Image 1 (tube, one colour):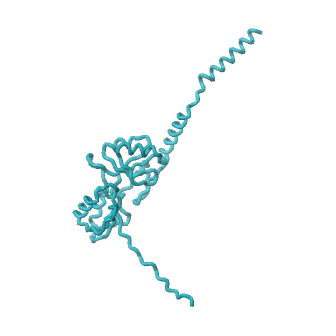
Image 2: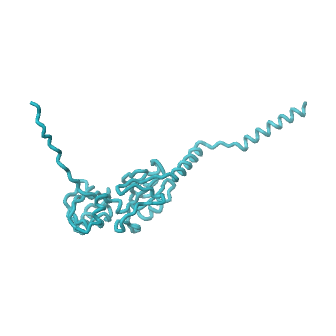
Image 3: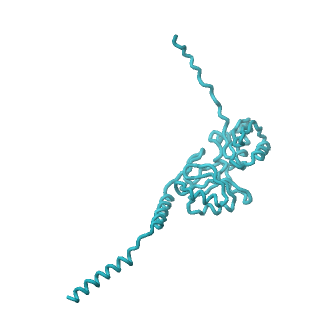
Length: 238
């Protein structure tokens, strides 16, 4: 009887020891971290397009960024000057992700669907930002992205004529410096918005490409033509 009781107690201790050594539960913070890694991993495999006026594209797809005319493409910015980039995150943007970008000295500007922002930063900051775990892709905000589709068609026209345009400018840019550069291109400044965010001008169509390549230009479009509202000619009932 004593031997039977001893054998039973030994088995209980063995099974108890197995459960204690082989089953370990992750702490809540570890579970969250694991879930975030799995989410990021799955998001990387999914298509996440960036939507611009020039079109929509997934920069990590086999087609990559849209094809642009040579004169509307930049290979790189000068290392000693800041430039404008598109920074796309891996998923729905978290506050701490934006804070981490800002902590590098970069300036976060406008939002671009999906999960992307226009960011102003220098060459060294660009190197830091593009390897952040939260960042999916970083690319230059090309001059070809800054032009309305109807103006893109004007680039191939051989006939030159004056055209009125509205130039949107990034916050923090030196408007007077940009105004001087526009005049150098032969542009005639018509009006500058009170806050300096937009410039209305007239310029030759053969200078449109040079205009959108100016640093600080966010977007260029034609001055909209407003049509008068139709007059209701029906006679009132007497």
